Amino acid sequence: MLVVLVILSLVLITVSVREGETGPLHGVRSVVSVATTPVRTLGAIISSPFTGIGSAMDDATATPETLSELKAENERLTAELTELREAEQTAIRLEALLGLKNSYKLESTSARIVSNSTDSWVSSVTIDKGSSSGLAVGMPVSDSAGIIGQIIECGLSSSVVRLMSDEHSSISAMLQSSRAQGMVVGSADGSLSLNLVRTDQSVEPGDMVVTSGIGGVFPKGLPLAKVAHVDKPTGGLYYEIRLTPLSALNTYEEVIVITSLTEEQQATADDVSEADRQDAAASAPTNAPTVANNEQASTAESELSSDEAEPAENAEDTDEYTQDAEAEEEN
Amino acid sequence: MALVSHETTRLQSIRRFVILALVSAVIHLMFVANLGAASGLINLPLVVSACLAFSLGGPPAVLVGFFSGLFFDLTTTGPIGLMALLLSLSSWALGLAASERFAQSGQPAVRQFLLADCVVSILYNLAMLVVSGPSSLFGLILFKIVPSILLSFVAFLVSRAVLMRGGHVRGLSGQLPRDGSSKHFDTSSN
Image 1 (cartoon, rainbow over the protein chains, first blue to last red):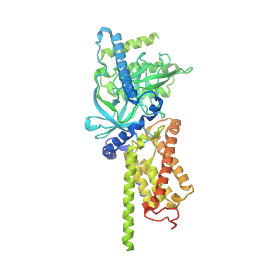
Image 2: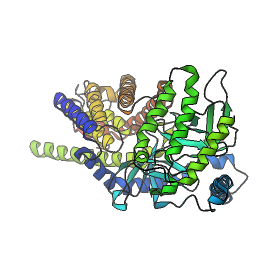
Image 3: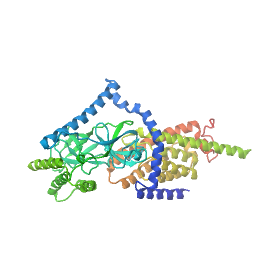
Image 4: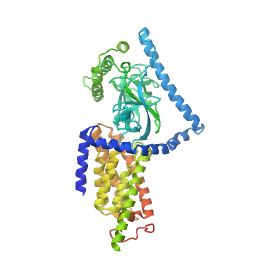
């Protein structure tokens, strides 16, 4: 019995790893996910009153209603402020070439978080929409404050979203003020950091970090996090930057899944060139690529596939990044 | 007459087992995701399969371990079959001496569960490390493996206390302990 089940398990593991997302075993998992969604949802509803116990203890002087209203208002205003700053900077740099337009004309589908991850390996949440609603693996997911992650598994009526705090998550990002490019990565303890930002760039605590749009997966300019702490290592090429996420996820919250991007929301070939130039400038003095450089290169390479197919038609972004490059060269 | 009685006992055992499996599955889906410390979560299938392995022993314990693990695999994002493999092996190991250890007032069952808990958690996370790519080993141990082990251990202690209090150790298997003694079991509820 034991031998048979061990062999069966090994066969399942092999098939599961090799078959990809469309194989029969993943189909079974998808069916299980659909079948168990009502139970998960019920659990989330039952658990939701208890998730706020910790914060209620910290904020005993205010009523829960006031706190939740203020929190919602704060998230809305932060997102609005980020959007306005992004639009303002774009308008200033591109002067008459651009009209003031909404950076976030997102084509999206709303969904609701129904549960957290049931294993400790992946920081993820399950949402109540799947392929039947037009969702697919890879689509970015955002809440009212900004990006929260990306779909990694998509069933018929539910999807698993890897949160950006997961240690295997990395998102191309840039600092809104200085336009310095980097990668927002998660960690095992759930904290966020911004990697690969050169020490000759300007970074201050409180700076907003937004998506760079490189790769065509995440829309350009969506808020990700705020800079919490900046450390400049002696002789180091890159800052060590810790971030504070903008979203405080609770289960049973509304999110939006961004289903497609317009051309304005994608980074241009010049954006990618600028990222490469920053990386090359950082690695040049050492004459030896670091692990971090390799990671960025591989990420950029994997995300480039969609960019390579599209010519650099967005003159706005081209000019924007040309100016950035000039400014950085002056520095 | 004895045959009918034996058949009735067997059916009752199966019914209890199915109910326990369903309740465990529902608890796993509803609450485990919301009960965590650091990035660790309770491995409820391990707890359930261990309790039943101590009670049942032998091939049934291995079967329970396999299907518990398979359920875990189907409700998570890891490779399907990985936890099934680990829980099959752990249930087999824990079921070797079966019910007498579970019921003893001493600590052998607790120690052996803790060992199985550690081995399963470490092997699972290391396998995931191989499958998922580079990760911080320190973070993995500190924030995932250790909290998961501790939470599962606490869940096991609670489950064990509940099962022993209700006399379900015998009731699930429908058998007395292998040494024939019933002194460790409260059979009044059966």
